Length: 293
Ligand SMILES: Nc1ncnc2c1ncn2[C@@H]1O[C@H](COP(=O)(O)OP(=O)(O)O)[C@@H](O)[C@H]1O
Ligand SMILES: [Mg+2]
Image (cartoon, rainbow, N blue to C red; front, side):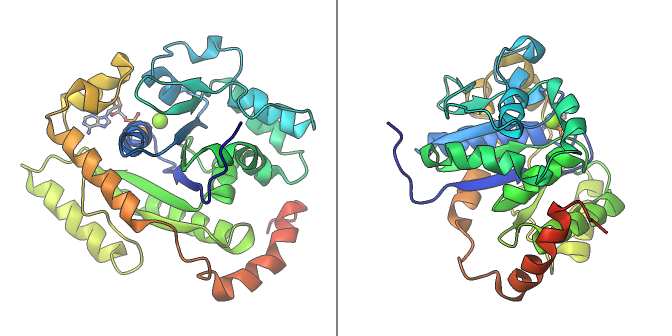
């Protein structure tokens, strides 16, 4: 029996740039939330399957049932069991694995009706069993990422502190705004998370200041930023979280504080949609029909 939950919060971890800490953040924020007693599902929506690999399945392409299969069934109107394909990690999170088949699926989505809502349909099926669903997105703004944004309550944007991809961030924030207006009025940006910060350098401080100046008035920048550490880079091969691998290290402590920051920010107010809502209602149809302009 599934336990009905009042609210399940869906958070997309998104940045179209690769190597910025999306996957590391998804697993450590997710396991952080599980350590706080929350029921958590992690979705690997990246064809590279890095989240799946980093949680103990080093060969994602060999898995029988993955996100691509269940989404394929949804597209073809086939029945699926809510537990189908879901794996259980020993640190208390569930995982819907992803692999290379997602790239084929993404291509085939182009011809599907309501193609940006397929992932959302899947989430509707499983969300009653979870407090949080975290989606580890592809490093692109393709259909899978749009699907994630179309069903998320919040977006968390990891940004690598090594250089400031202002342009990329602008493009991402614009895409999020567009999805919010046209498809998903409840979507909010949870915040920008600086990752791989080397606090000994002035450069890291400059980037933090620049981010604050460029976006601080519009978007929250998390007060926690993730330090750079080889210990963090090691976990993907270990199949465990940073809390297991290096519990006393800085990265574990920061991810835990980040977890608390995410927990307190809670649900956006139900009535926050306001004017966006009516605008979005008018435009949603157009996009669903494929008349994206
Ligand atoms: N805080 C960190 N310190 C050092 N290396 C990190 C840290 N976070 C992630 N990494 C490493 O950086 C690489 C990219 O991180 P990853 O989470 O896979 O990014 P993305 O999912 O955005 O591609 C990986 O090899 C990962 O192990
Ligand atoms: Mg990744």
